[in-house]
Image 1 (spheres, rainbow, N blue to C red):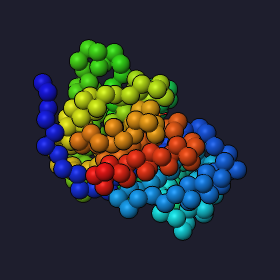
Image 2 (tube, protein in one colour; image 1 turned 180 degrees about the horizontal axis):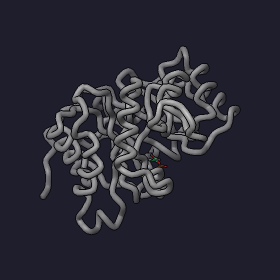
Image 3 (cartoon, rainbow, N blue to C red; image 1 turned 30 degrees about the vertical axis):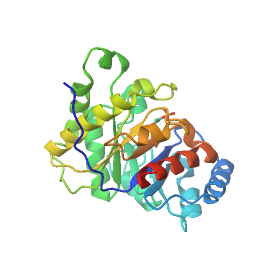
Image 4 (cartoon, helix red, strand yellow; image 1 turned 90 degrees about the vertical axis):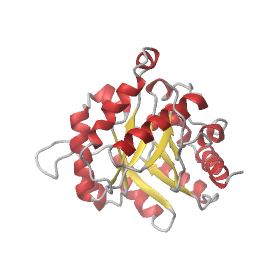
Length: 257
Ligand code: PEP
C-alpha cells in the first residue's frame, strides 16, 4: 500500500558524519580546519562521529565551533570488568552529544541484536546522550516485500521509551550503505512516511535522517524528500570538501531553494 506523507518538518536538519574505522590525529585536525572555512547554514546542524580514539582531541578542537560530537557505539554497562568497552558516561565525559546505535555494520558484523540495542538506548538516555537509532532492511527483505516488517521490528525498541527522550532515527537501507546505490526519492519518501507513522503510533515525534551512499551529487534530491530531516553520511564525510557540499545542499533544501 502506498503511503502519502502528511508530514511537516519543525526540526533543524542534521548532517552527521560517521567516520567508521577511519581517521588518525593529523587527519582530524586538518578536517576541522577545512570545515571551519565553510560555516553551516543556520537551519542545519552538523555532527561528527569519529572513532573513539579521536573523540577527546576532536572535542577540544570543536569547543568553539558549532559542530556536535558523537560516538559510533557504546556499551550498556556503566563501568567494570568489560575489557575493550566504552560506557555512556565516558562518552559524556569526553564531550559527546550523540551516539549511533543499531548501525547495520554492528548488527551484521558484530552480531548486535535488537535486545542489545534496547539496553544501549537505555544506557544512553540515562546518561543524557542522544541516540541516533539506525534501522534498515537488506536487499532480499526489500525484494520480498518485508521492508516495513523489518523496520517495525527494529523500531519496537522504542515502544516503552518516554516520548520526550532525545532521539534521532536514521533510515539506512543496508543495500545502499557503502555501495554507491541509493534508494530512489519515491522509496525514501514512502519509507520515511511509514517510519514517521510508526514513531507517531509509539508517541515519538523525532527527526528521521536518510543514510546510504549520500554524496554531493545526490544530497539535494534525497534531502528534498518529504519526511527526510538530514543525513547520516559515511564515505563522503571523510573529506571536508564533500561533507561540506552535502551540508550546503541540505541548507539550500531546508531554506526552500
Ligand atoms: C553509514 O555508514 O551510515 C553510511 C551511510 O555510509 P555510506 O554513506 O558510506 O553509505
